[in-house]
Length: 177
Image (cartoon, rainbow, N blue to C red):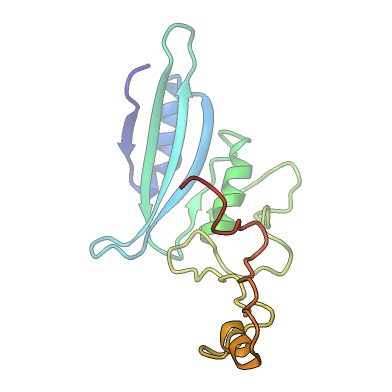
C-alpha cells in the first residue's frame, strides 16, 4: 500500500470535498476524529480528520481530509454521505465539544452522549480538561515523619515491624539480585 494522501480543506468546503473524495473511489469510511490545537499560537482550533479508503481490488488507496475549525464552531455533518459517520460524530462531539450541523441518524435523537456516564460534565479529550487524579489517602496506620513504627518500637524497646507494602508490591527480598 502506498503512503496516504492528505488533503487540507477549508471548513466551508468540508462536505463538498468529502463527496468529491467518495466520487474518486474513496467510498469506505474508516474514521472521523479531532485533534486539539487550541493552544497553538497561530490559528488555534481543532483539526477534524476524516480517513477514507478506496478498496478497489488490486488498488487499495487511502486518504485523509483535514480541516481546521475554531472553538465553538460547528462543522457540517457527513452522515448523509456515510451513515456510519454518526457514531464518530457523536464521539467527537462528546469528547471535544464540536458540533455537527445537519447531524442525523436512524434514531432521530440528534447528537447525544455516547460513551460517558450520565451527568458527566466536560470534554475529556481537550487539552484544557483537568483530569481527576486518584484520591490520595495515607496508608493505614501512617504517622507523621519521625513518628513511624521504627521510632515507636524503639521507645517501647521492641524491634520495629516489617514495613507494609501496598497490595501487589513484593518485598525487597523478591526478584533478581
